[in-house]
Image (tube, rainbow, N blue to C red):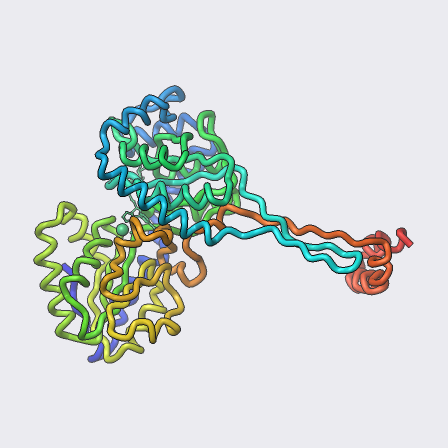
Length: 427
Ligand SMILES: NC(=O)c1ccc[n+]([C@@H]2O[C@H](COP(=O)([O-])OP(=O)(O)OC[C@H]3O[C@@H](n4cnc5c(N)ncnc54)[C@H](O)[C@@H]3O)[C@@H](O)[C@H]2O)c1
Ligand SMILES: N[C@H](CO)Cc1c[nH]c[nH+]1
Ligand SMILES: [Zn+2]
């Protein structure tokens, strides 16, 4: 069960260390396994991919069944409710609106005899990972797929683990709603490796994006360089900062919402109020009893959950910036006043009516966010992940003449006389 650590009596480095160690993704056993999976898929392609799929997901695939068919998508519609379609269409609208704002335009500047600028191009083919091990994530289809569509990516290759019944129907319908129709029934490190190297049935892509469990996150990190990746988006995290005005019922519910994702998820409360800390603990124990994924929650809270009591808000902000959580909730009376001090978080949720799950599904901002302390340098998934820029340059003869001596001087300073010569020969 989740424990209370009273830092007012002295900082407990043990718990901070434990939270940091989880962050470093340094589980050697898993790293070894992931490496083995990657090299096997690289060498033996489909054969290894299908063997691992059988081993981890319990399904027998071959070249003729690995890809989702039009018929399977049609059948998926029969299994989802009208309510789901309504909700998902609303989410699509909000997420699209949010991501349209991120579009970047080609720009050119014209001076006398000179043109320069940057041309924006979408990536040609990307792989999107939609998790599906212990839960189905139609919302992650939207969060991965919509920014790619907005950017104009030509070929979106989606992978997601399936069960014997195929890929979850909500996931298939979500994909169809946003026009993704190349879908493969594979998941885990083996699917990521297949996208990075290509197999007989899975196309090689230029970039792999999307969230997943520790196997997926570590595979993406290991394959960076063979292929581009968006970020390390592993097991979910939430850190709530709460003061004495926070409602313990809400805080507990939000901590539980992320703990249910994975036994490796992390839910942390940092509060200036011992009473709130104690009430939240009681609420967690009470609410947990009614939740379907109680077993996962228990493990996650025991392994990587913590309630930390601090002297003041400054200390709380310091801990949050140090942990750099995927999600940061500010359940405090003056949240907007301290926002300038928040440096590291994937996404910040302000006030008690902006709970994290609102962002998971419907509000519009992307829920594919950096985890494991990487919010120190990674950003949320966005349209920018799906574009690249090309510089463009034009000089007239007169403009080149004007700067020729400077270019020659700089080339000579590097001892690169062929570079200098490329200018000289023109005059
Ligand atoms: N950071 C984000 O933006 C974000 C968003 C959504 C979900 N998530 C996270 O995505 C994850 C989803 O996890 P999931 O497990 O439900 O689905 P998943 O698709 O990420 O992983 C399932 C796959 O993991 C592999 N696997 C499982 N056990 C294995 C083992 N012992 N050895 C080798 N491979 C193994 C299997 O191949 C399986 O297909 C959760 O951790 C959740 O917190 C993160
Ligand atoms: N909280 C997850 C990101 O860590 C995203 C998600 C999808 N569905 C529910 N939650
Ligand atoms: Zn969530």
